[in-house]
Length: 169
Image 1 (cartoon, rainbow, N blue to C red):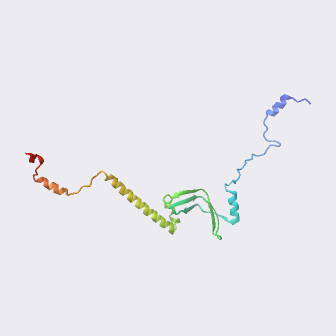
Image 2 (cartoon, rainbow, N blue to C red):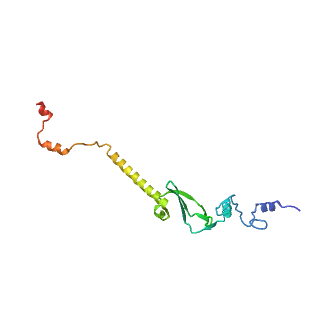
Image 3 (cartoon, rainbow, N blue to C red):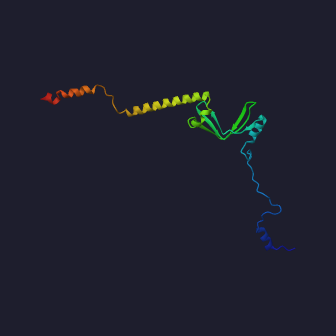
């Protein structure tokens, strides 16, 4: 059987879409160690061992540090078991100062945090007082201290005083 070379080249150049043996859909390979939701499989396995359940309705988590900063997690995923007093909180965390979150965070502050907030306010007042003193000292740096009573000098002007010129004559 003779093979027509023109026909064969035409078939090779034609691109086939679909048909028998062609894949039905595109296969997207997932990276190892990550699931579609972005959760770590090892973390999920550990959560299963602890028998924790997801807790819903938590919008943000704030953890107060000893240095006065706050570890702020917005829209966290929280799993917990109240019976065993176990909570797992994960999400994108940010270190923020207490003053950045202050208006909305007052209801979350406990007695320890209120004490640290009081200390923080006192330290800010002390710092602002020191800055005011330093600024006042900087302003008065070029002005010499004056002693004496200027009223006495003015009263002495009315009386004729001898000047060096009078003494020379």
